[in-house]
Amino acid sequence: MPQPLDYLKETASQTAGPYVHIGLIPAMAGFDIFEKNFSNVLVTPNTPGERITLEGKVFDGSGTPLRDVLLEIWQANATGRYNHPADRPAGAVDEEFRGWGRAGSDFESGLVTFETIKPGAIIDKAGRKCAPHVNIWIVARGINIGLSTRLYFSDEEAANAADPVLNLVEPPVRRATLIATRGERAGKVVYSFTINLQGAEETVFFDV
Amino acid sequence: MNVQAPALQDPRLNRPEPFTPRDGGFFQRDHSIHPPAHAPGYKSSVLRSPRQPLLSIENSVSEITGPVFGHNDLGPLDNDLIRNYAKDGDPVGERIIVHGRVLDETGRGVPNTLVEFWQANAGGRYRHKKDTYLAPIDPNFGGCGRALSDDTGYYYFRTVKPGPYPWRNFVNSWRPAHIHFSVFGSGFAQRLITQMYFEGDPLIPVCPILTTIPDKDALDRLVAPLDLNASTPFDSLAYRFDIVLRGQRSTYFENRTAGN
Image (tube, rainbow over the protein chains, first blue to last red):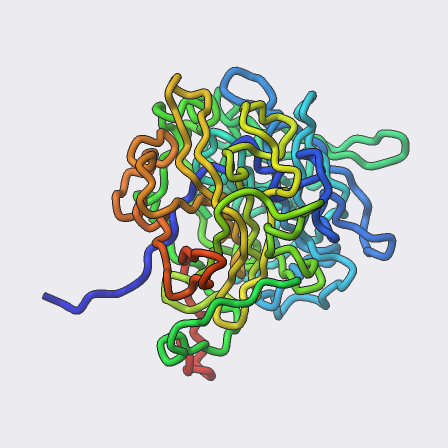
């Protein structure tokens, strides 16, 4: 018998359930408990970068928007740096931008929104330029393990066409499920996205 | 008032390593220990499970990095569910301490990571406008808290033991007593939500959510044992719950061979 490898096993995931708001967004559950709360607003007045709103819905297999879903986003700052020590070679950390936020969907409409900035392009370890993107993590009742996906931007056509991750998506028609559409409303830039958990237009989810 | 930390294990067994985030990728996730997305016994998963295979991608900086939290994000009572919503007295129920370590698959403690938790009250009722179970709301119990792990990955909090409750899956579906956990780790790809159960609960083997986990050992690892050594005499029982996040490789540098 060879020696055992002795790695520990990852703790198994369990659904966040319908009451995820109690723990992660108590105000949405209907009460105030923490002195400091996390939110869907990633920017301060001093954050450099183009202000954008991300706005979308997550649909189930019947085409109904999930009204109890929780999304988290993680993104680079305007110069393409993640606010984390493992991104050392990239540009300076922006103290005004943590790069992370969470949002629950509206209990009536299912709409999810984030107020953030457009991220810069990052460089991968092979030195390739990656198209600007936002990483998304999705949990809800009925989702047994959090789903990872990405949002790319519709006005970055050239960068998207060269993006090493988008180019892995087969068949290519599915790449469109990862693109948020740029629009404007009342002078604000709004990127709209749709996440389909099932169906002909099922969003590409990643095993990261 | 803050909770006193239960005594740590023998520190020689628990020696913290200096922690620096590694910049290699995370170990590949072993999906056989996680519940499948589509698990018809848990009916809500049927319409909410992707049917296409996940696209496996090598970790990039987008996955090995993740949000960083600090003590400024927390309030002094955030890890004390007995006090953080108390209005005119203590919550009803059995007082307990829950403690453990956040580790990665290599056994290293994950320090300074945010652990969030939420639960029903002792009667099995959530403080949520969507929960209509007939058990009473406890005016002194909010049901959520959070903690930052210390240098060794250790975390703890104080609460009351949650009650079991019925839910609409099969007519007689009951959730065992459980506490929901949300953990970050050092990279966004480690992000995990899970649930902790209590040793000896007879509802564990018949729970349609818990039994979505195909691996019996993985299921057992969600069950926290009673830990009398960490209990506070004449005050609180303790339960020990260690959480394991994905391991991470370090990048091999020829000019810095130590630590690989």
